[in-house]
Length: 422
Image (tube, rainbow, N blue to C red; front, side, top):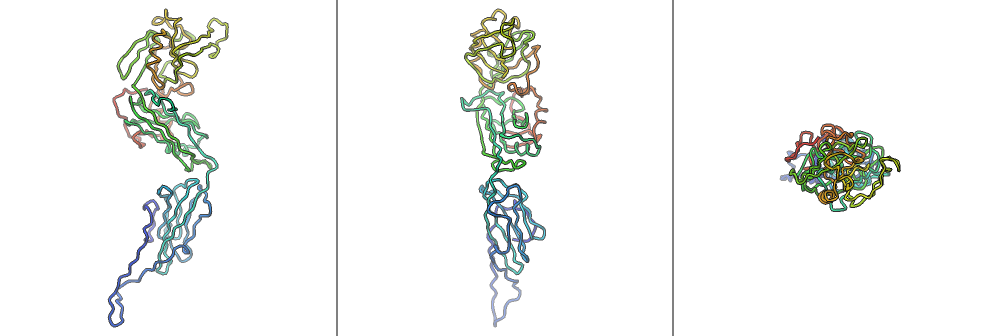
């Protein structure tokens, strides 16, 4: 131990001080005066005082102060996991305080070494706990992998926070508590959709047949205005083959590719004038073998020329507003020739059943050459892939691209042989 100014995170703990005084040879009762003064080992507890009471406010620093005539030589504070809390010793050795954040509802151990100013040195240990947080932030993670746990390569990760987070520094804290790993590793980024919702997507689609894990862990960490991290959560899933269906509204054809190879082309019909299908990249949201569709749900008055009320089979949903890829046996004569639907992509019952059986949630359905407006980025499904990569990264609180190998690095590059997406 010495009196040098030091940061607590520079050591893993305090090693007990063992002082051995050299033994001098004696002759005629005289002492070898070349031997220096002997340091005494003393109880350091009376030499110091701390700010610890029964409970410590985690929003305030924990402090240690030397009693008059004494100085501190070293202090470390560690949590139950053994990790040290950063701290700083004053130049005069009279005080020490934490500079790192304390977690709420957590037990800590402080090891303190001190000098009594009279040749005595020693150490003491004290324990303290921080107050439990009154406001906790938790996260609902998506996608929900309670089913098969296998998703398409276009599936974004989603985080719904239990409380809004507006402050930029607090948002950075939230992102630092989110970890995405995958095998193989890719490059991705977080996007703050609003104060309570974040999405994560890779720069390119997920690799086929990959494993992905998302976790949130800010337990006890201070976030903002008395808000602390609550219970951790995590999910994991796999991706299937890379499935991409491209619907060309001009040629009235759907091209289905699996892992880059064309497997099937299907004659289709899309939205007629006034009901034009949205252009852009969409992600499959769900599938229903049979679903009732009514024009009233999209604002078409019952009894009007465009009204309808049908039981539809083999329906693959791509927007929350009601756009599907589904069986439309009533329009087979127009499929491959004209656009006559109310916005959905219609095909024969046989083709719709095949498409249903060969598609899963998270797969890509892209519409091109339609006169409809562009797919919404958020709120009507997953339109994340219609945002340029540069703009996507800008909506991260950290502005960093994230390697799913486990680290964030603004210079990291994505791996793999997939084609870049817009």
